[in-house]
Image (spheres, one colour):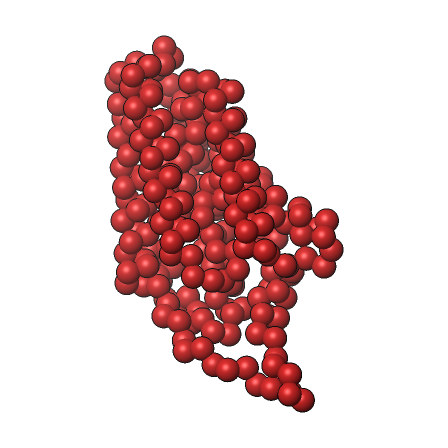
Amino acid sequence: MLRLFETYLEGCPQLVLQLYICLEHGQGNISQYAAIMVSCCAISWSTVDYQIALRKSLPDKNTLIGPCPKSTYFFYKFFTLLSWMLSVVLLLFLNVNIALCLLLFLWFLGILWAFKNQTQFCASVSMEFLYRIVVGFILIFTFFNIKGQNTKCPMSCYYIVRVLATLGTLIVLWVCPLSIFNSDYFIPISIVIALTLLLGIIFLIVYYGTFHPNRSEETKPDEIDGKPMQIDCRMKYFLME
């Protein structure tokens, strides 16, 4: 969990800056493109690593094993992240205030989602509050399961909003084109954003439709001295590591 926090808190702002500089100059060299790809891959893989560790920590879930499930999950995260990052950077070019307001609003919604789930992963109230703030920040860029529960409906809503926000950004930029971009440069960027988003959604559907580990049958907890064993202890221990 701490590795996930560190990667997103450091990597996402860095990736936005890299994309901003690259797009501002209108061209980049191979090393710049390579650095962007490495950053995006590192952020995406941290989510895969978290998913693997999360499922290992939950006794009622099968583990995520095999190259196909892991690679499919990775590409789903990679393409959706890259598409959203490019959209955010274009919004920054359009209007910094609008972009910051949108990101702050999404951060606020992420924090509300963490509070709605009533996470209890820290020993103190203050640390729990900080944990939910960081969770909200990560939810700006990608969706992830914060309690190991069924998130089919919330995740569907999340990516519906993501698609609408991305399409809205492209439409606004087509209606009010930026002076720093000519049509020969803006059209490829729009195609990359739309294509990576489409690929990300396709990999998401393939992963959850084909490669998602099936849940094992729920087993009743053993009773000790007439009291049921707490089944969330491993989850809590994992998230506190």
